[in-house]
Image 1 (cartoon, rainbow, N blue to C red):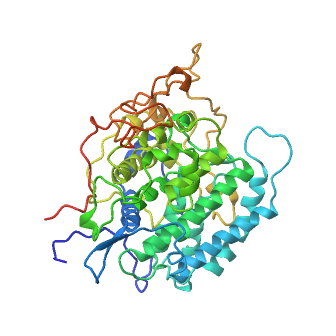
Image 2 (cartoon, rainbow, N blue to C red):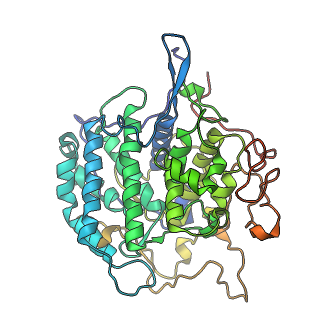
Length: 491
């Protein structure tokens, strides 16, 4: 390997001997201008660095065969017994999630009538909050808990804020990608504090994704099912998924072409024995692959909770399934879409707290960020009907409302199309219909199967559930050029 070989950017790890001034994470995003500031912050740079780091580790690897000189592809599967049990920290975090799952039995869902989420979720949340300090003492490495603080805030307090914020809102009885982002930040904090020992070729990153993040997703899916949690900030049929996004990023990486090093990352193609992207619309294929791959595991949960044709209730995912260029193309598109639909949307990031490990300070290496149509259309602080709520300085372990977000007193929420007109209109602003960023066609609801016509993006294919002779669906002839990982430019 030469000195010119690009390396995957990794999240920095703090010097324990130097100590660190920990701080209680607080709300900093109050309007659209704050979203623009966030996109040029050190916190945003760290989040994207961590995602690229984990994503690259999930790409299959080419392994040489010494006997005949051939190469085999090593895929990282959900059922791989070596990944979750390789590192003690991975086992401990998995056991922490198991302990949180067992608390569900102590807070059975309320049998009474309800319109939205089950109120017993608040009981589960309160039990978790009360026990969280002891659980972290039991399952986190001592070197993390003993990390020297140069302030009056302990590392456990900062970690707790992100962990307790990753299971949904006990106030609104909902769960969404903002809570998923909070758990990613919790893992990023542990990385910065040296919880994961050094390993080779992304072993610890794969342990994080398959041994911790996937069990976390299993936990939240059970919370959603048990307490009927509402989607938080969902775009409805125009959203990728009601609750999660990260499994589609890392799951598409699992099926991308095998690489030897990060410079080999492909912009197109798929792993040799990967299922076709269009298989997401086949219940039998989803059931077969959901125990192998994160993408199909997330699709499988959709099949568990939704009825009807897949193309009808999961329009964007069905649109993505028509990408002909393979899982590598989908993977790059998913990272772009995560940036646009999660990190750049006020309804998602408004409750994300910033402390000393993910800081709101400007990133000196960031390019100037121009306000987008989404951020510029968000409410401004000067136009708010009441004074901006002040960030809470309460410890989330001591006060359950410290991490529940803020709400303008007296404000009434309403459907985005309820503009006073006689009928529904396409919503404007940050919640307007979106589409997969790699698709050049504007997605539209497919016609009923009885109509005999195909979905507008499925040129060259048959109606939903059918494929062309080459197994492909959709048409990517007008798609923009493929993108590459930003570190893969040889100097």
